[in-house]
Image 1 (cartoon, rainbow, N blue to C red):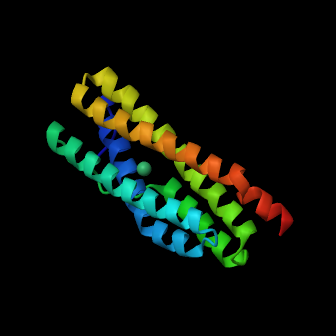
Image 2: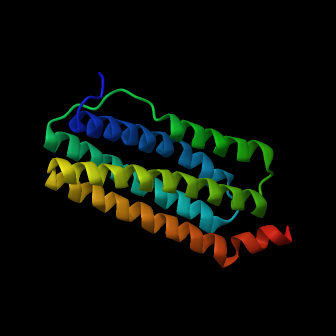
Length: 164
Ligand SMILES: [Fe+2]
């Protein structure tokens, strides 16, 4: 289906982020196992749980609006997940890998913050009030997770990596 209207674009972006969230839920257990720092592994596990909730929120929104998602694969998330695999393949388990994993997770967060920011703007424009509330809730979660990752890196993760 071609994207012609703002409604089409909303459905396209929503389908894309739905694919992105599903891809990251598949990658997170591997990222958690690859982390040396138990705090980082726990953060990835919490992030997985949060992402499952975000997918539920997206499904709820789709039902409320009575729309159908398109079967598309988010190419950006595919690339970010691939980079995570590269980190695991090329850096041995330890603080340097952990620093790379945090950086990778923050790239994912920033992608999602941009995606949900766009969806919020589109929902607002289209007058999808209830959808906007759900999208805003996820946007705030993504921002909070990004900040948690920054704290994790600054509270010793990067220092351990520098000493390694
Ligand atoms: Fe997410």
